[in-house]
Length: 141
Image (tube, rainbow, N blue to C red; front, side, top):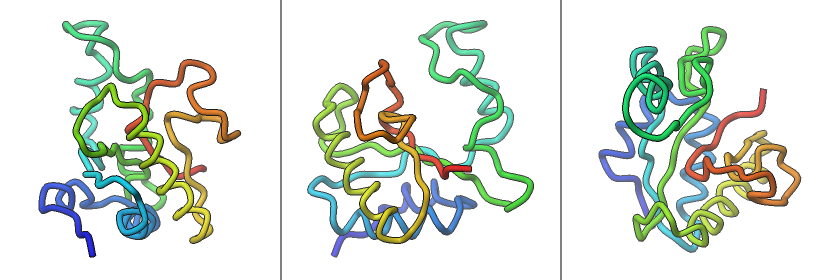
């Protein structure tokens, strides 16, 4: 039985219990292992990411300051996580696809509405519009 590393567990602090439950199931059913690289962000961290590629060097990595990674004031939890499948290669879309399939299936089994950054409109056609946030999963509002 797989379990999350301490780093992943720490990243899940203050993340919605719905997401945590989905990820725990997905970890057991996924053909690839994965880790949680980011859960809840502070406003300062979100601003840092937003400024990247705009005011500071680097490529643009987010397009909003109103991120699901921030604590939702209505629930008290973050509603998003970023995951990275093994082997840890940002360019291996095949591994992201396998991981995402396991996460989405676990969410469906649990009745949790979850959106993947590789298929923002959740129509099952991945990367159709150039979606490039393959690590990202968030609760559907």
